[in-house]
Amino acid sequence: MFGMPTVISIWIFVGLMVLAVMLLMSMLARLYRKAGPHEALVVYGFRGTRVVKGHGTIIFPMIENCRGLSLELMSFDVAPQQDLYTKQGVAVTVEAVAQIKVKSDTESILTASEQFLTSYFVLTLRTFPPIALHNVLLLNDAITRHRKH
Image 1: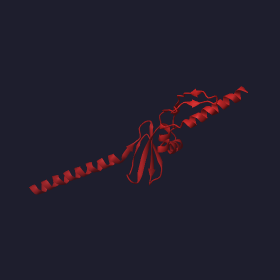
Image 2: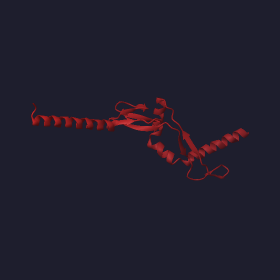
Image 3: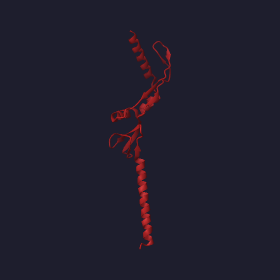
């Protein structure tokens, strides 16, 4: 019925089709990004900025990019690099922990992504400026003095 070359060519065609489908699935799998249960993906690029929570999306390279943002409670040590001094000249060593949590609505996630997903914020968290903590302590001293009067 069918000659041997015809059967071989059919098997070659089927093999190439299976290979093409596997290659296509592999490419789509690499483009697919999924947000975890306590994570949001902020996708920005050609199609605008959007937030993906609880499911996945396809990110087209060179057209779009995405960054993950944790929606869990995050803690950061905010200890200064050196001792701080009160107005009376007393050295104070301060150890503090700051905790932040991003609300899970789209507007809060977009706002948090503008603030937290920049290299400046990450750098600020790693090297918290002692002068800022010093100003907080001075403000606390002023409030305390005001309450006493």
